[in-house]
Each structure stands twice: as C-alpha cells, then as structure tokens.
Length: 179
Image (tube, rainbow, N blue to C red; front, side, top):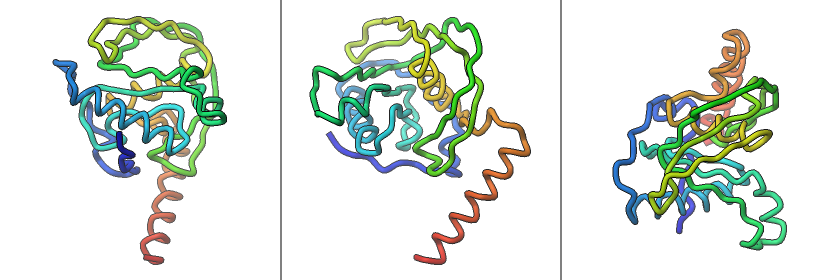
C-alpha cells in the first residue's frame, strides 16, 4: 500500500467524469487500498479516484475514521471500498458543513439528501446495496459527486463559489511567491 499525492483544486482532473470499471482485478483492489491509506493519512472520511488522479469510478469511505485512528484497531474499521457506486434512491433534505481534501481550508454548509441507497460492487466484484443516513449518506453523496466531476462548492450559489475561488487563487499566488 502507498500514500498517494492528492490532486488539488483547480486541477481540471477534478471536473472530469470517471470511467466505469469493467473488471474488478488486483489493480483495482490495489488502487482501493492505496486510496484508503491516503484517506487515513490525510485524516479524511472519504476519497474518490479523481482526487488522486485516477479516472476509475471508485471511492473509499470511513466515517468512523477518527475512532479507528485513535486506537488503530482493525476491528473498529467501517471502511467501505466501492466500485461503480450509484445512488438508486434518496429522500429528505439535510444541511451540513462539508470540506474536501482536494480543497483544503474550505468548509461550507451544503444541502444534501438525508438518506440514500447506494448500489455498487465490492472489492470482490459482488453487488452490494447500502442504505445510509446522517454523515454516511452525506459522505457517499460527496464522493459519488466527485466521480461525475462535481465538487461540493458546485452546490453553492454562484456568488459564494466565486468568493471561494478568489480566496483559493490568492492562497495559491501567496504560496507560489514563497516557493
């Protein structure tokens, strides 16, 4: 397993839709394992393939990541490795604060569905269905959006999105001057 480099906004890779995985093989399983290790190293609760420069429709999610990292027990892991995930039903609305590993330092309140049902393949290639609410539902929606080239800031008003883009551009310019 390896910790991979994150793709950061405004890299155009983040806006590209991903390709469907047609064969679940060792390469895909290794990608999922590397993504999980990267997510844990970055202290995130979800990671989608475009965030590490891959165009495969795969995500990893572990909303219990903080508890797991506190005592490093594999038994506590609630890690989901999902291939070709899709939301097949949703209901309700909920607002919550979101952030993204690819847009560091930005957190915004986003409206999402309160509950979702997601169909995907697991790392053995078996079809699974997950019913989720709360943080898990929010995280699944966020990561599946990534697979379609949608960032959480795309859910904001144009004015709010433009303010964030200006802030990020200034941070990037400042960083470039320091280097």
